[in-house]
Length: 98
Image 1 (tube, rainbow, N blue to C red):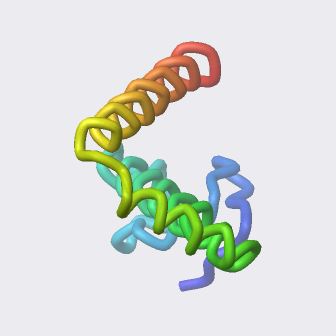
Image 2: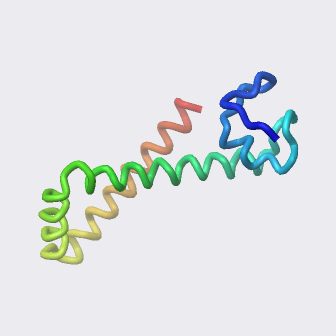
């Protein structure tokens, strides 16, 4: 089975066609779309998480020392703020971006 960057029939990305379970040339199932989307999201998370370690390892060490010296309450507040910001970005992206 041959995979291409864009299927001429549907214009769907290759990640979707990698999980097509032998359904090449047919509309992908909803579960297959979600699977491909989740793989894409996890790949993007790994890329963004690894970027600071590659770009500025010295700053990462300084930041980790700060994290170790911080109190539990300040880390909880930071975590809560980041979770709220993340949910807000997801909401905005889903509402305005599709």
